[in-house]
Length: 135
Image (cartoon, rainbow, N blue to C red; front, side, top):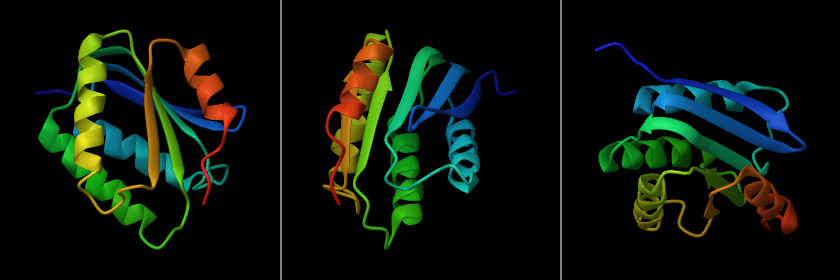
């Protein structure tokens, strides 16, 4: 089945933004994340914003676990707290983020991530800028 989603990243005032449109998939998210971390402008302690406002289908719990494991591998040995905001208008996205938080709290990066869910970009950006995560 052909992939129907797209993802891109960009930087917005010191925040790494990942925007997903259409169908979200494990491969799509891993690909955009791999491209992001190779970008010279990316810093490990940079706040991140996942823009899911135009996602039509979210990934499932097993894919969330795989993404958590891949990201934890990348951050192994790096002592940087991470702040992540997710923006979506879909109530299912909020449920998926709560599930991701539960999954993350059982993983190797427990305590290294602050993650919040928002309905608007303005709220998410304000939270990401309000008080940076500490090392």
